[in-house]
Length: 396
Ligand SMILES: Cc1ncc(COP(=O)(O)O)c(C=O)c1O
Image 1 (cartoon, rainbow, N blue to C red):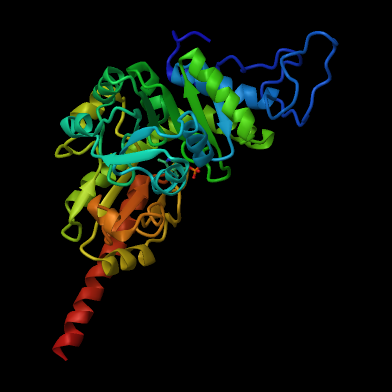
Image 2 (spheres, rainbow, N blue to C red; image 1 turned 30 degrees about the vertical axis):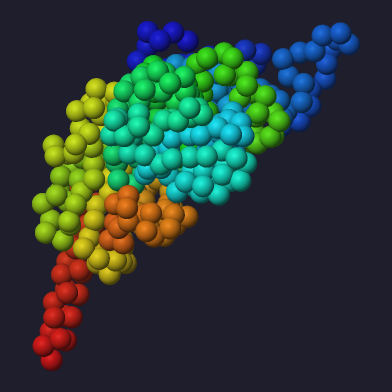
């Protein structure tokens, strides 16, 4: 479907809006693992479901259209998408990875790729001189995530792509936090866009899924080969759930992002909070780049208490958000990166990246923002009460 429509319209009116044979307005779920071939000499579009299946293809077409790519791939988790895409590399290659990469990607790069002879260097992707300095003759890939998780650092996508291209490297971008409704990295020159569709694309904490999208047809052919070779494919029921989630993506993300800014500004006024990480705040160093390359600041923010103890008291007194690993859902999700998303990262590495023991991450859902703020307020009071009582105990 043409790009002439706004994204909200395209979420609903895409090439799979109506099933051609039946007129069904919801993509039919094809449970078939294999497909009868009507000709001995020439096979149809579908042969065996590991290679392709009509329901999975619908999701893959939709995400490719939304990201402005030529081909999409659906995986059973974000990590399956990311790890399969890394298999485009070969033994002896070197990669540059953003230093505050998602913990699972960190684990894959450091503990799996390394064993297969693929070396890495972590680098601050906002420091372009340092990025250039770290490129080696065998560097084949620059891997970015923007905004990053959980410190919401903004990488200038175009600048990194320019460095990458100048050195004949590929660029991968994890677009989980913003999705194509807010940011389209392929338009900025990225080669492979990756998603944990478990998050905003699915949107309801009810499915695990991953997606990859490419623009270049040859790269698409190579990724299709790996997808089939590894067999890491998303089941048809889950494809359908993600397709349904995508229909409401823009309204969910708009509402959550608006509330996220309100909460971030409120947190900045609180004496209990050392630092608020949100690219929509005036003092965020990446704000202007974010506004050039994306249409919103997103629905995720992080904030830092002085200690683990204060973060713990706060979490224990919050009533509305769930305290869980994940983000990007209709309900607000509060998480503790030190033991959740970045539990796979050694403490020393974590602290180097600003992921302190007092840091919490909030993915804002669809609750009324005034209810969320009241909840925050009462949990902050609990911290104050606790510090007053421990002060009194010490006096006694
Ligand atoms: C930015 C980012 N990328 C990738 C992943 C991995 O996705 P999944 O949990 O679907 O494997 C996550 C999970 O939290 C994430 O936050």
